[in-house]
Length: 217
Image (cartoon, rainbow, N blue to C red; front, side, top):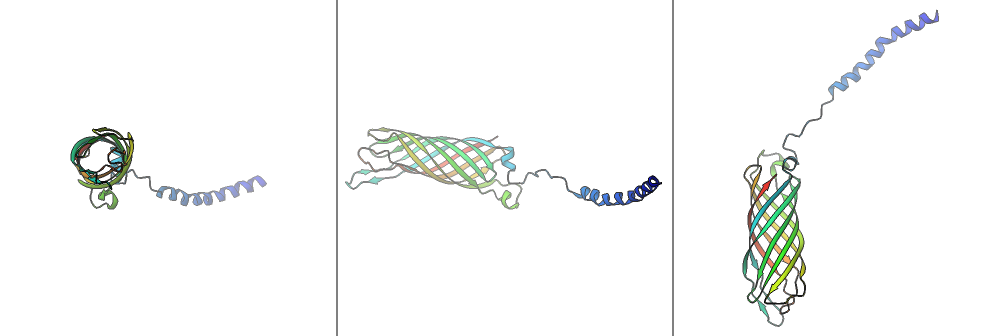
């Protein structure tokens, strides 16, 4: 007898249980599926082209210096080349390594250096920051870096063969499609003094105008 009552109660409760599950199932059905990146997020370029390499031509204007004994070193203009390799962390931030065959020249002597920099660079990529444009061909940038220079002198003696160096830069990238970029810019380079025997306190400083290209892959 009790078994009959229990079965009847279970049959009566089944519709209630089913109705209670309906809102849960409806809530599950309304949950949106995760959306894939649409190609305009903050890592679109970095995701598709994480690395790049390139080369630059540098026109350098070296500083003049006169010490307290009126010993004068007149800075000259020189040309050099550099190799570039970089990695994009975000579309608007990248790390770049530069190797420069530095040639600094004054009126009576010169300094050759193998100089390496690690730079942090910020790209003003407006389309990713504000979503105003889908394609941006002109990308200004600013950056700063630090490194070392392995030096050798001509017609003068130096005490320090290895000197620290720092740099600040700004420029404009002209993107010709997604793989190729023309790079034109300016760099201020300060090299700690290698202690020339004639002018101990002369620290090589250059205003460098640069032009080159980068290949993205």
